[in-house]
Length: 254
Figure: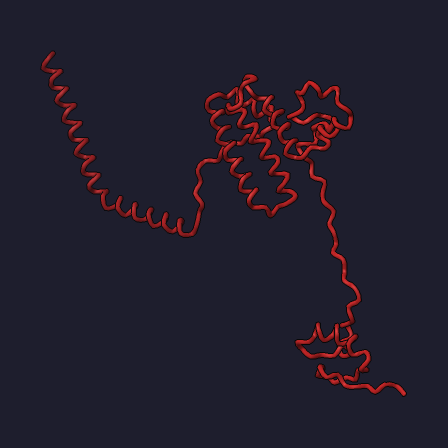
């Protein structure tokens, strides 16, 4: 004989369920719909969960970097001028080259290359042009990082601070040494745009206040109009009297 069907004790519909398979049905349906106390057989679209869907992995976009032009065979900055480096094995050279280097070490070489383009002399390490070159390398690194991680607000703030600092240095160079400013922008491939004139943010409150001030100014001007007209006539009368006196003096002198 078959096993006796028992009604579901947790369900409102009281559908019969075999006691042997109660755990299989109730484990999925009652966990999902335990709040409403519904049976799995009552809702056809609810099925026992067999497996979980894998999340779709998005392919990362190939973002061009300003460090791509560095050759991988170039040695790191700390080992470039070592005299013994030519007699070292190829494996050691590869370990000390940019192929195995971190982004920080590549940034050192890139910054040095940009500084060499604009520095005034071999010992120049702190002029305005050198500071602009160092800030430019930082800003480009921050831009690449924010393209991959757009929600990184801390680095976005640092990038904006570096951009403001570079703008101040470039505006000073443009005001004091224009030829150096042009050369710096050309060598570092910087597109300098003039800062916009002062413009206030127009709000509803500002518009109402401006209209009220203008209305008050016009009313005061109307009230002071007779007094101003009187003063103007007095000035004209004084000027006319002074001209008549000068004419009389010239006539008596002749």
